[in-house]
Amino acid sequence: MSLENKIAFITGGNTGIGYGIALALAQEGVHVAISSRSLERAREAAKKIESSDGVTGKVLPLEVDVKDYAAQETAINTIIDKWGRLDFFVANAGVGHFAPIQELSLDQWQDTIDTNLTGVFYGIKASLESLKSSKGFFLTISSLAGTNFFAGGSAYNASKFGLTGFSQAIMLDLRQEGVRVSTIMPGSVATGFNDHTVSEKDAWKIQIEDIGEMVVGLFKLNPRTLPSKIEVRPSQPPSK
Image (cartoon, rainbow, N blue to C red; front, side):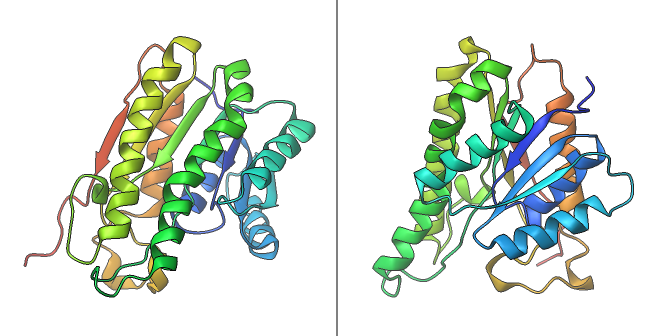
């Protein structure tokens, strides 16, 4: 299935996994709206994508805090006003606060849950009618931390375990209405997440273009078939 002239919205699309997905879709001719909490950063990313090799889709930068339902609703309306439809929503924006429970603050807990879980709930509520009209696709970016817990990860684990379950439940709610829902659960990805600086030492990790390629394949798949949960991990991590 060709993706040319389809319309996508990617939260947190200015960097990391979201950027990799936005670039891959734009190279397929998809018109992509990308959001950041900073309009300046979204604009910089949009210019970079549009000037990349093979890109034929247009890119719309938006300022959106996913913790704000009204902001997500406004973003959807802006996309519809500009391009007339919405085919793909990629709920990618996320944060990570990692600390033992003794040290985890109330604000860190709330920010993690509000961004990684409630923000996705806001996303589907804001976009549902548009996705029903287009028989579209709602994709969430969870994590292997949504099935594997670790010390210091109570907030992040809770948000991603919740996101994985939420995604699977709404998949069952919406499939009879023609809206497909899936979640991708990556392991280690070479991104700047949690203030990490990407270097050659990250070559063994999943790369953002790998996730982009995966999303393109998922969206091209015949609508009769739905991979509802995809776990992906580096094929050969360093030996311990």
